[in-house]
Image 1 (spheres, rainbow, N blue to C red):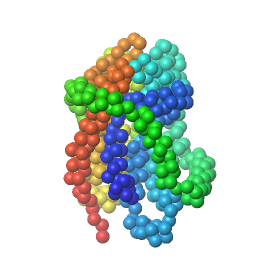
Image 2 (tube, rainbow, N blue to C red):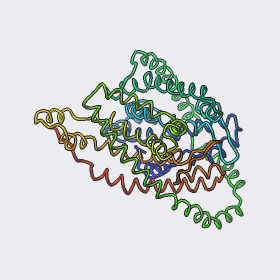
Image 3 (cartoon, rainbow, N blue to C red):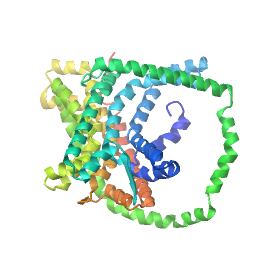
Image 4 (tube, helix red, strand yellow):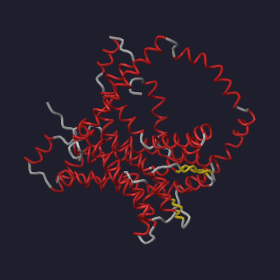
Length: 472
């Protein structure tokens, strides 16, 4: 995308829609592609990995895209002059250029993977359910069976793994490649881990170059596609029945009408909840960022606490908080919404925003005695606007996806249904309504993309170039 406008024009809108699809929206696809074809054991494990990847990969893709797109154009000219093959450009130019972006986004992606852990380990569609072995399914099973000891041990194990992984891997990695100081990490242990990973990376590079040389010396990709085309066409037409195609086309209007009406009835509730939570999350992130900026040690603890809390799976919060809030489901729903939304603004503002504050602006503020409310409104918040809006854009998508866990919760003992699009998709999944899940997820994605273009893109365009200090 970053190096081809033609690819960008096709792939960017596709990725925009894919990142908007909630995790349950991928259930029909993984059941059809992996479980049905490979069986419940192998297919189930691959499905779980695929579902976790869908909750992690999008911000990393866009991070790499931004990094490569911002490279000096002269680099492309040099690679063209020396006819550097794509594999070498990838290994020696694009990957190194994307390291800081990948390191920074890995914190958010790691949290996103844990947040949807239980949904990825318990794959169910109607009466079909595949419960994989893993920490997420263990905690859910312990809760359902009423085993308080096992449930507590499972949660403590989860917290420990999350905390250690941040301290040993992700925080030191981010500190090294971004220079962010408000993170806590064990650098000495990370050095040992990095040496081992460097050796693995070296082997991967060696094998990639060998594979590239073998392909280049043998059959080309175009030739391979040409040779395989008769087989692909046969499989395509063998599975395509024109009667089915006509039937689907004739029923398309009734399908759109049925699920479209249900979606439109549910949309206002979720729409109000999503953007209320996003605004609250932005305000809270700014407040915490200001505390972190003025009290550095406290800021480090705030970030560390955020990393742990952001990684707790969504479905864990209902059984944890509902007894505490004395059966007040609306409070739990708002908290789960925040869990899926807040951390995007939190990490963008507290880590990337605060660390990118220009020293010259801060020094001028001290010289002219700008402090308190005036400093907050006229210097601090305007300086953070790019990070606030980048976080808000991601947070809105996170809130839409979290609506599934926030608006509906069901166990053998009780059911909580708060209404909305998330609740609708969850109930369609429980009923085994594959067409309903796909249709509602697609409509939801269209709304998210539409809001991104109509709201966030316009705001970003309006603030671009504002509050920038030109230095000679």
